[in-house]
Image (tube, rainbow, N blue to C red):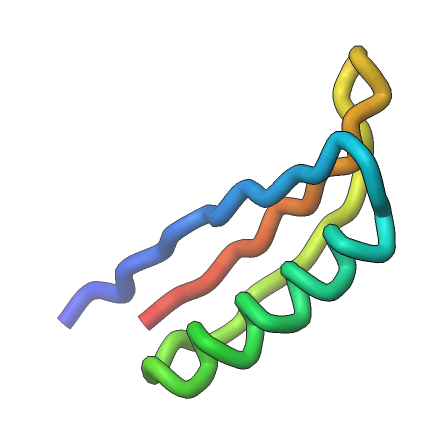
Length: 58
């Protein structure tokens, strides 16, 4: 059976702390749903919007 990969994109215009909490909650939720966390990366867009990319697999 082939692995399935998904990339989740989260962003928050106003607060990096709110984004961090949202990422933490998302990681806990997808882990409970049986997904494996492959990677988490933080960055910002050209408009300086804090963004997180989470790669998961099952």
